[in-house]
Amino acid sequence: MRIVLELKRDAIEDVVLNQLYHHTQMEQTFGVINLAIVDGRPRSLSLKEELQCYIDHRVQVVRRRTDFDLRKARDRLHIVEGLITAVDHLDEVIRLIRHSQTVEEARSGLMSRYLLSEGQANAILSMTLRQLTGLEIEKLRQEQRDLTNRINELEAILASQERILGIIKAELTEMKEKFGDERRTMAACRFLLRQGVFVQGIRPPSVPVGESLLRLSLCHHHSADMIQALLDALAELR
Image (cartoon, rainbow, N blue to C red; front, side):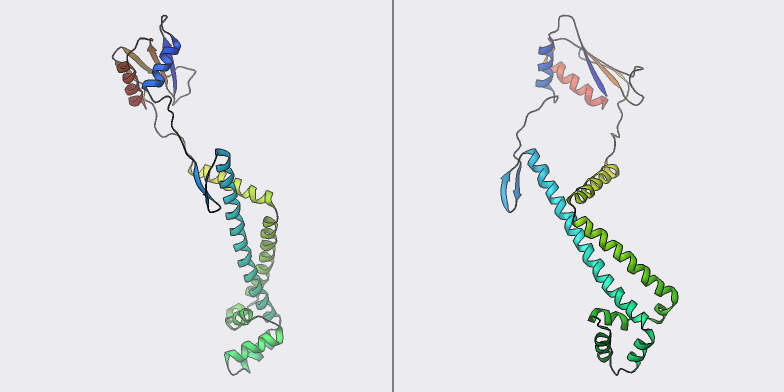
């Protein structure tokens, strides 16, 4: 919505403007204390400092998240490499397990013979027969390649401040596109007459469809009641 104030010839622009500021919410002044806890200590921040603190926080979030994903990928790759080792020596592994009296003996045999960790040995002992098919074995090798690429990507992110800031920018842009929406209300075109204040809502050719032009005819000697009437008229048009 655009608001046009048309004054009479004898009106004083500054007086009318000051009355609008005084009797309406066109201009308001209030104090703000930007008090925040920074590094465990209370600080009064400027707007720039607030934004910088938020960016620093997001950098920490992205770093911790990436580091967590990196640890998970490395742990999974470690297990997959153990499974591939077992597949590459499948007959020997099956023979070792069949000749073991207990699970602990089989686990120790796998760890000592193929230099596996306990986690890798447990994963091998938990394998099912269907995981020994050619298709499942190929899936393991593909997973190994994907995990290797994923780890390289995550390590590159942690090593580059520029890439971390790029991720923050992309996430904020996505948030804006997902949650940012335009105004859902539309000013209705109507004619009102409030205590000598003429309010006319029209849409001339220069105003796009869906917007309204509000024309107000005021003079400098309007009282506070008339200014309040103006405020009420504006509230009805919103």
